Image (cartoon, rainbow, N blue to C red; front, side, top):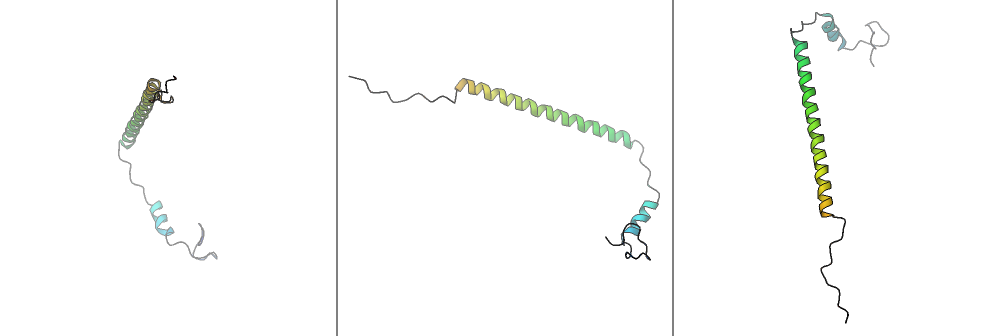
Length: 94
């Protein structure tokens, strides 16, 4: 770090950072006024985002639960773990 946070031109640590002066000037000037109703609009938008996210999460869980039920019903009906019946008849003793 060149100069440190409080280094001045006579500081033995080195010259100050050239980016520091513009930042200091910007911080010392008056801040622009906040538009009226900004907090209300921000809160309304945040509420909308929360509702949309909650609806999307609910929809995703509903689809996942439906897919699970459909898979379990299919598996119970077709029993894919059983071997298919033999197509060749065993020889007839005789």
